[in-house]
Image 1 (cartoon, rainbow, N blue to C red):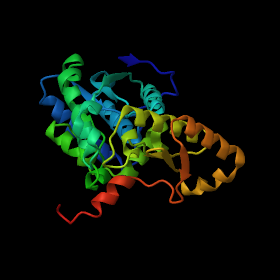
Image 2 (cartoon, helix red, strand yellow):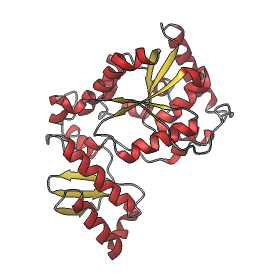
Image 3 (cartoon, rainbow, N blue to C red):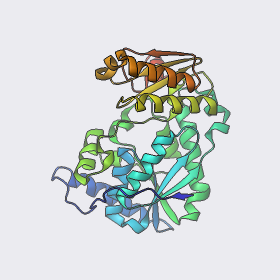
Length: 302
């Protein structure tokens, strides 16, 4: 299903990039052009989320092969926050492209629901399987690419990369040696709305490993995070601990919860989302909090 977002200001994909970034853009272009030249179909599908990585990959690919050969594929499931879906369409509109929504069903997979540290593998495997089985033929795609950057490729908590390699999905940003900081530089040079957008991991990352992922839990987290963001916090994670919601916000914003109006709004709204108790984590936002705790305790090489 294709949705059309209200158009923000359009960008110029042909804008010159800073001298130190242009060779990286050319490396991405070379890989994509070579892959398409060897493919049986003429178009490239981007595993797209609306975040800065996939938006920059889209911009560089469309710059290299043309917008008419670039297709944005957005996986839709209960693990995608409603606000992220909306933002993805807005960012696509700025790029001048529509979005093809592909339903994924990772929650039907018992290994995904089990929620071990390799949960992301099963999610990405389902995503790329759907692309292979449906999107490739429907949209005449010869190549699929996704937005893994160089920093992502070095992290131990990214099992989704294994699924990408198993499905022969390209990862041109990482291959070109583009770091996260350089991704944001390129996004700023293009004027992408997502240039400063905080990372937005899927909602399942809010559920501690070993506790089952369910659609109900994901929905509660989605609603609760909308409440926190609606109270004026710039970013947040609502960790799902059964009846307890543990809220993480940027450390510089933690003091805002002392405001009675904000505290009351958050407390009332998060409880309405399905929690009985609400706590604020004084450590602030912790990327990969649940996964890295487990991986750091594993013997090297395990």
